[in-house]
Length: 353
Image (cartoon, rainbow, N blue to C red; front, side, top):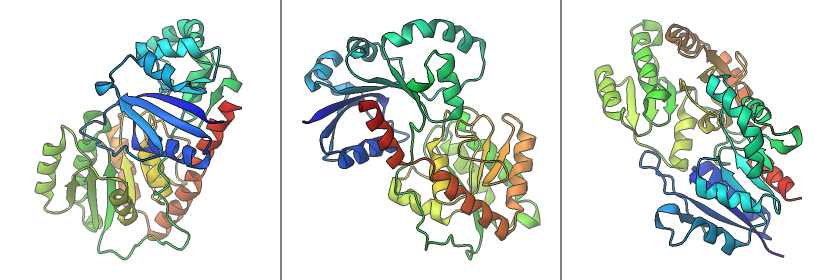
């Protein structure tokens, strides 16, 4: 008997779409129907294949409730609780089928979060009977929201399976220079300017002349980053957003991955980098720390909003020997394997049993 899964998203990322695709291919007795906003201009991911039905809110010709009813869902997944139309649907189905909320908010102990937790215990259960989160920091918040341990699952996000190095693939360390890679939107909270400015300071020192910085993405800071790149005369390069195949090549050629974000709820790109065997630098506020990075084992962690500590950690990474970078590379690959589309598939099936 064919069963239908309904996915209600805001703006669906490519990596989540691939998890859904893997699920359908692995479980042919299930169909997946998605409703979401169109991809953003800064990250124009391609969301199309023959296995998943996807419609966009901007062009929907009926109400959300009517669209969902037409699918006769066996399970509903909603990304967050900010869309009132989505909440209305979830409330109608919560006592009949699994209704899961995806949450990637981090627990930070702020007054706003504490107040929200006091009331959420009473209203969230009206809409959802399960919560799915990326990692340990998010699970802590889920517990404070009133969800019991058996209603919480980890592993909400997984990078695409394309991001992996086969056992016989060895990262090329014989290039003319070594490369720090940044991948993300060029916006303030991801702090690409901090990375570029710090790198510009370091390359003034002779010992770092064999390093380069490659930045991939789109966003409002792109022009200023390109101006900075021009000033370095080849030490920094800026490229447009890349689809998965091209991005894998960029990961494979890089030596280190750095994402100095100050407000990164998870950072699937960190999982991509780790899967590709890259040593990593992120802040201690990043949602994927410590799940995807053990300080000193497969990368370095710096104190959020501490620019001096960031410079110290970037300097330390760029000063490492090939042997140390290789050790971190192997550890990144091993840690990344704890999260996968295969495990995502098992978790989804668990909700349905």
